[in-house]
Image (cartoon, rainbow, N blue to C red; front, side, top):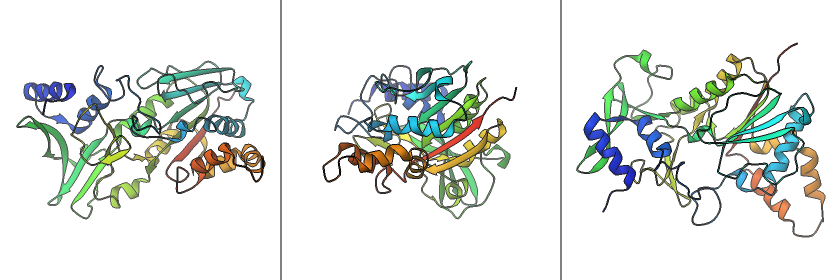
Length: 327
């Protein structure tokens, strides 16, 4: 079988320069300037058989209005005094596109676009931005940690392992899990969070994503959380068809929360998507539930998908925090 363009590029780079650390491989697979998964001009998000996955923002009939109401609830000032800045949006598919909104301005930044801060108070929002970041792989075998790399063997990409000689080099707290244990560590997600928070801006931080607590990642996921997604199918084959599939792992919520505290954010809240909207978008939800009783309602159907635990309601969580400068 003929190798994919990016696979050929990676194979040559590995032969010329040596094995790639796993997060460097994922970075190329997702963000190579021409052949990376998030750089190619293809449909990724949606329900059609040509897309790879769908998320809350795919339910664009309701997600944007619910988000606006939640921002009204969380902001200590009128939305009209704030900009709404979405980071990591799909091309031409911002969550507020085509929706009447109360904000002073709306700015949509795609994957890799630079966020430089904001002069007025703002809402900095992201949906599944952090699970789309490269991650490192570690394996605990024979009483020690090894880190995953990608090499070439017989024109195939394979994973290899190198001992971690110094526990201080681990990006997570040193510990001894029950072995064998595989840990996919979202270090780049934490680094991106820190970069965004350190910019000059004040207002509301709101990110929606899927992840786990640190202790769960370290002790209760022995096979790791990294997955490949293509055409709505999940796979553990992380080295197949690089650039053609989404690669992702669960983020560590505690790492993001630590960064918010470190950067002077207060009133931190982390809730399931269901609880977040039920708490902060109550009036709109009640209106949808009581409108046209006894008749089919597309809005009620969409609301069920967004909130019900068996759909998206419990899989995703929302993390928010406030930072306003004192005069």
